[in-house]
Image (spheres, rainbow, N blue to C red):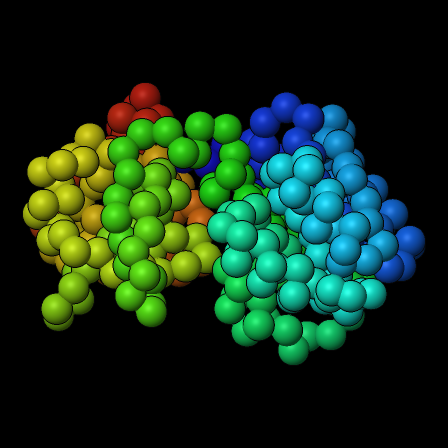
Length: 258
């Protein structure tokens, strides 16, 4: 369940997280550093004014994440990302840019996201929560799943990084906060292997119990479940509603009102 007050609780990124901030404009580095410190007072920083220095800092310091300006002295942010991925480094990357047309190239190099400058605090907070999901303390613990990316590449991911599973006509879709994968298991097989971590909310949908945030009950008897990290609530079937209500009651320590 969410413990946030109004969605504003701080993300759990461990003690003294290290960030690389690469931007050729000192004011931009300073603003991002100040925003991060306001959220994470014990954060540490390595700064760079060009792509070459950014690569050095990332290779040497192994930061929790790197914020890369798209347009900076070479190599630019996108090229830095491509070089890191070619080296097999999976450092979470966030692009900062004054232009809004870099979203697709950002995701081509598996970036966590991008922020328009001047960086907005609320958008930064959303990125930090996403970062906590993929790199925060204990996020790599527990069972792992082998999934396929769009191009067919197989990767191993911690189950805890995913949000829910949805059965399609010929495959199961595994949905994370910022990515979707194909899974070579059925929903039944998932339940058999990871039943303690999963909850069926619909004949076609399994969700991570750790993602449960809120149960929405409409006046006409329909129900939907809100998951942390998922923008759109998911439908709950009448057949599975009692079990879903029980899951929320167990978490809260008291039954939900009828």
